[in-house]
Image (cartoon, rainbow, N blue to C red; front, side, top):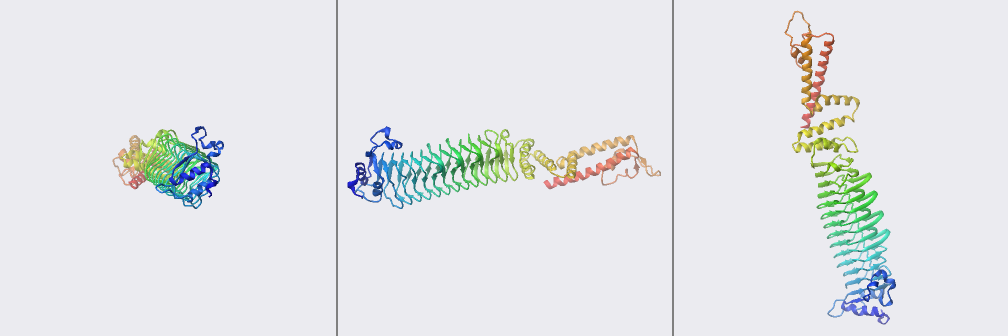
Length: 539
C-alpha cells in the first residue's frame, strides 16, 4: 500500500500501529458517538478496510520496545475487512466503530479481538482461532454472527450485544469451542435463532437477562451443548420460541429461575436426554407457555419446579418420562394446566403439593423411594386415579411398597385393596361377580376380619333359627342330642364332620335355610382361601 495515498485519519492509524497506541476519531462529540449515527460522520472519521487489512497482514513492523496493536475508536470503516485464512499476531481493539460491510474472519488465526459498541451488518468468523478473548460487548450486529467451528482460547463476551436477523440465524455457533466463559447477558438480545448445537464451553454459559425472539422456531437451539460449569438462563431471561437443550451436558447446575418461556402449542423447553451434574432450577416464577420436557434426562441432584407456572392445556405440560433424579420438587405455584407425565421415571424423593396436583397424570412405571408428604392412602389414591391411561397395576404396587417401607401397613393394605377394586372394573362380568364376592366377604384378603364377621353372623342366624325349629331325625332308632349351634357350624364348614348334619334333616323353608348356609359356607371357605393365598403371595 502506498503511504502517500492515506487520508489524515488513516495516516494517524498507520503511525500509531507500531507502538500499539489508540487512535480516537470520535472528536469527543457525544451526540454523534453512537455508531448508528455513522451516516452523519464526516470524511475525517472514515478509514478504509484495506488499510486495516494491510496493517494486520504485516505491512508495518512493530517499533522496538513496543507491542504493536490495532486500536481504533469512533471510525467508519468502509469496504470489506477480509482477513480470511490470515494469521494476525497483534491485538485488535475496535471501539464505537461502524462497518459498512460485514467483516470476514473466515478461518483466521488471531491473537485477540475486541469489537466493543460497534455496529456491524454481520460478522463472519467461521473456523476462526482466537488465542485470547473475543470481546463484542455492546455491539449491534445485523445479518447474522457466524462463529461455527470457531475456537476461542479465552472469554467470549457478548454482554449487551444486539443481534438482528429475523427469520434467520442471529447467532450461528455450531461446534463452537470456548475454553473459558461465554457471556450473553446484561441486555443481550437476539431477533432470530441462536444456535449452539455441539458447542463446548470450558467455563460458564451466562444468558442472564437475555431476550431471545424467534416465535416461529427455536429461540435457542443448543442440542448436544457441553458446558463444563454452570448455565444461567435467569435474572429476567425471556424467550419467544422454543429452547432446545436435547442431549446437552452441564457440569454444574442449570438455572431457569424466573425465566419466561413462550412457545404456545409447541415445546417451550426441550431438555430430553439432558445430563446435569448437580441441580436444575425451573422455579421461583418460572413460566412456560407450551410444553416442558426432561424425558430421559439424568440429574444428579434436584429438579426444582417450586413456584413454577406450567401451561399447555391441549397436550403435555410437563414430561419427566424416564427421568433419573435424586429429587424432584414438583410444587408449582398453581395447578399444572395439561398432562404431567412421570411414566418410567426413577426418583429417590418426589416432593409435591396436593393443592397443585395436575388434573391429568401419567404414572405407569414411575419408581420412587419416598413421597413428601406421604399423605393418607385415601389422598394418594386420588393422585393415582388421575392417570389418563386408566388402571395400571404398577403405580399401586409402588405406593403400597412405600407405605410398608414407612411402617404404614394399614395404608399399604388400603392401596392394594383399591388396586383390586379398580382392576375389577376392567374385567369380564363373571370375574366382576367373583371379585365382588371376594371384596364383600374378605376385602380381597386385605380385610381378614370381615370373614370372621360373616361367619359369626351366619352362625348366630342358624343357631337361632334351628333352636326354634328343631330338624327331624333321619333314623328313628337313633336319638342323638341336638345342638343348634354345632348343627349350624356343621352346615357352614365345607370340610369336617361334627356328627349333626348327617343325623338331622330340616323340612320346608328350613331345608332352604340349611342349603343356604351350606352354600354360603362353601363360598366363604373358597374366598378365605383365595384371600389367604393373596396375602401369602404379597408377603
